[in-house]
Image 1 (cartoon, rainbow, N blue to C red):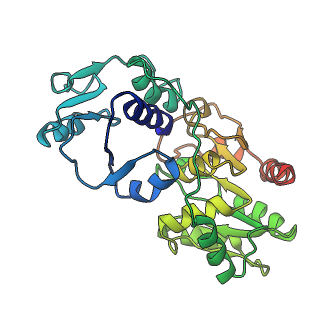
Image 2: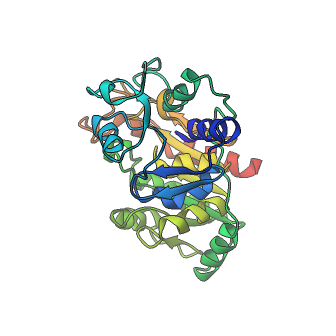
Length: 308
């Protein structure tokens, strides 16, 4: 969700500041994701380089201190967590994460610095060779790229965001019966849930949870026909790539974290407790998710597949 802000900052410094090198630092998975983000001239680094300036997207004291200790000359970021004295340009919080979208929160860094905004929505691109790699993987498992539907039943934030496996199973069985090839994407801990979802399907399918590197999962998403998933990082990637994306929301608020893309369908039938923003549901029956019927999600999937 920070991609539009990153694009604005990079474009500004290349065009107006004769910047020769832009580094993106953070968790290791950024190395796989960066080719899709499309930041001209940017490279991933697993440690902070000595640089002239750093833009801090994390809102923590630690991130500012680490940049200071790395000898970076100028630090730009939001005030808060006692770090204003470490910042060269402490910015005011004008966007509330409690009721406004996270994309706008990051974009306001660029806006407060009067930068041009080339993107307001996430718009990812597919790096050279990724599609061919994905097609080869699919064929190894007997899947057709023209019929592949990805299901991502996990969510790193916690179980409250997860649609019930049995309901996903009902939808997946119907999709397989209609000739689509289902594939489960996720972490190793999603393997068992993936098997529940796939059930006794005998037509082509693949439970790839825990079996793909992130780079492989990204290329597969870029090549699939549909992504059905919870509110998760993979949801934002699929939507940003323009892949038809269908997502049930419950514990989280689509006004704040919904995906951006040209082919997105969000289903939200809030319960009295929604959005709770909790990691795990403590209400009997997980009502925010059970309110969304499998038939509604299946119809949304079919509608999106028929449009593309």
